[in-house]
Length: 157
Image: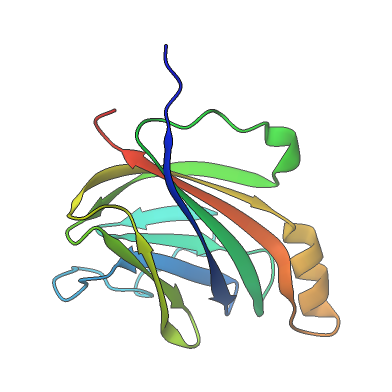
């Protein structure tokens, strides 16, 4: 079976507030449940139509997020390097995804999936959760202590 090719990669910051951040369809006017409504803090990754909710190990900090878009399912990650990993379905009407913070709202960062909308599968992996939690209990905020890898690929592949 041929290995899928990486189409694009970009890096964004996620401003975590109240242990949470989200990735939401950029054209969000018609979403039935906009971020942060119905956020489930008991789950690492949860999905709503046009939206992905991610629960962080730390209360307030800036996480680094590496986003990859693949032409098909990406190779499986070695789980020993990650604290958490989960997959979900995601539909985008515009092909662009906005990064949302629980305390600052929509950020300026946009993630480009494609030139138009489509259905995607996404895998979210996270490392540094315990360090982010310890930082939150100690001095407060930090940058890049918690790291995420978010991989999108077309759902039909």
